[in-house]
Length: 102
Image (cartoon, rainbow, N blue to C red; front, side):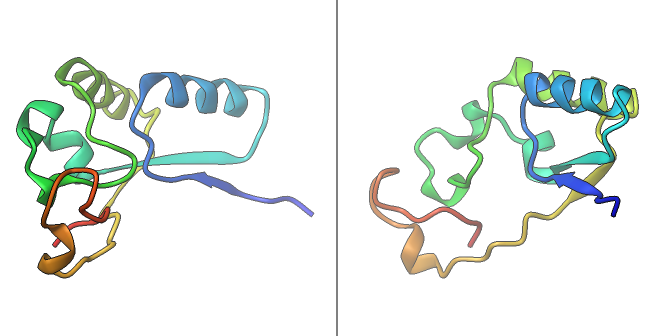
């Protein structure tokens, strides 16, 4: 039986490169990143716990690399990473707030 594998929420070029290499070897796998991972950086977070999610927001260089990989067809889909959290769960320090978008 052939299985299609999904790598969701991909946020680093290292992960995308590994997935691309696997595809070149014939592995049936595709990758997805998320809109917020393509539009926000660590600079945007600046201790704002509303922007805490997993995987974490990356630096500007990493985000720019994701855009290149998307344009090159190595990222196959953009998802929402829908994981809502009530605003009350997003307060406190970055260590106390839960992952997810309010």
